[in-house]
Image 1: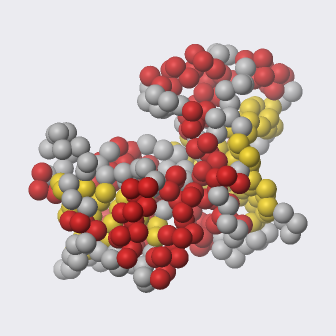
Image 2: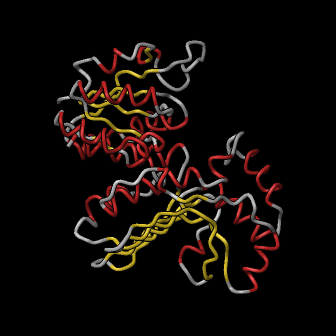
Length: 319
């Protein structure tokens, strides 16, 4: 039996999840692919950190060339984050004729077009399902399953941190600052939560979704952005009295006249499917001229949901 050899760049939360699930689901993946898929090298930066509990020591390397210029490695998975360094590594991997999978939403929001062109030039593919909405298979759905539709609208809850905060404020009548502290303590929010609470994370994801759905190049700078830091208990209360809930939505609309992309808090009717999406869950609502209305729901972040998206790309890359 042949073996498809994979190199992974990064071994943080997502990288650890990818390695763990590939090992745990090896039989399932081997059956679907028709051969074994094996991670043979993992690039890390911190030489002092002990990773023996996560992966065998012999898989670890500190030299990017061990993966990017290794002729035996067929596929490169990038889960390290950052933009400039990841851009360099992915460019090198594509130029060396490797399939590339990334979970890097910041990179894809800025450079998807040029990286996809580079992949095409080298006869390879760039996969980035994990860059938006974690375990929800929305990228491939828009690219393939809904490819025959003219997509008129995308509307989604694509940031779990802000959805958790707004859910707690709505259900428990708590202040924004109080819930934010709780979210940080639980690990749902970063020590610097600005990208989440000010809508920047959602805007990057909308740029990716809008580019694919509307077949129009959209960058992060094209998206109007407003976060939730000014939402108060009174806002939540007034919305409730009127039959609405407040959600931070990423909204894209497309017509013959214009394409519009924006992220901001929205009052949506309690009867709308998105109103029932709570805590750290994500959902994307799509309207197409053939499919009509469809909604995709699931966990939008975290070790295993994101690893699920990476492994889906991995199976697609092997095929």
